[in-house]
Length: 502
Image 1 (cartoon, rainbow, N blue to C red):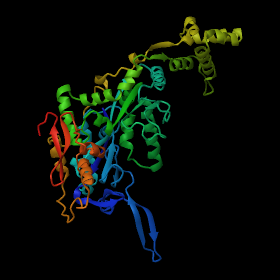
Image 2 (cartoon, rainbow, N blue to C red):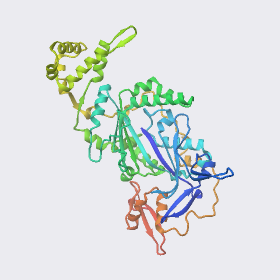
Image 3 (tube, rainbow, N blue to C red):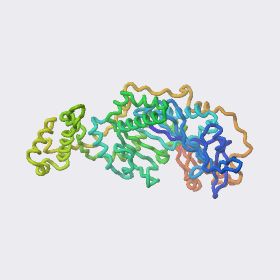
């Protein structure tokens, strides 16, 4: 399923002003106008006069959230700067959470997620949405996520333990983990360039669901609000809780470079067209699955020959507690079960003979008999230190057809009777804005005009040098971009098919 969508949407030309800064052309949008249309705009600095009047300086838009029936859509306005000449709105959300309040399972339709995000934006801030050029939107991050169902908690813990030590080519596990049951690959807080193409996250879904549920309950109690109730209800569902049990989630986070290296368009309309063609050939949902396979290739390759040591701590602990826990005067005693579990762990790490040598004879054999009473044989105890190993890849097998329960129903597509182009047109309810200033000043250099035009096409400015040298830039499997110069010094970007047809 698509678990996360990150989009950047440019503003209409009528709302963009250009300025010259350090030999660079930068565009900006009037934040005061955005504030009048519902965006939360705050100043970095304020000055106060003697008469009590004040002035605001250095306005900016902090991260905010668009409300919806379940979880919100995060958004922020950015001015032109860095690699982005033009100002833009960044929005990001989990389409599954947006549609149903949780992401334990969800849809493989990217268009569904995009429409839900656009619909939320238009419904909550219609006047601000009229400032946006929705057809210019492009994808900067897209998460494709699938899960592996393991037989029990011991297999889950063993798999996480083994995967934490995997490395292959550019794939490196990170030590910056948020939770014990979460493993990040290609993520490092002290190395900003790490994971610029893609990242992989592996974790226990049940643990994440419980963490989210506890966090929301605390927020609801602290804020004395019922606004979290729909999500709490969704996460508390017994069916959902059972489905998340022993689920190993494998999440891939694909960035702009990932798509560009594979000639997949990053513009939203271009990517959706690409997906339609891809899925007409390979079947519904196939693009999401292809994306996941591509992003996890190095990981799957690394574990193909790795052995997994299965440790049955959870099973042994449960059996010991069930057999030896006692209750007296309303108080539960777990001392004996914990002591015997410690003895069992010594047998695993030190071996039967070594533990026997370091303990008194009667104490040792009493403990052996007590542990055997829960169903283990003496032979098993004598060989615990050797471990039980099996190929890791045999355990981690993704069944793409068993990612959702039988009761799952696909969320309703907003405006299903409209094509995506018609849907975008329906979002624009504003009258044309008249402006006296041309979108680009006459003194802008050819390079600046070229960067502006590339940005409009969703192509990186890093391609400028190659285009000027006469090289072509591949935009998709069947389209490429080239630069045509005319005798008067002007130029045009030309999009043509790979086979040469314009």
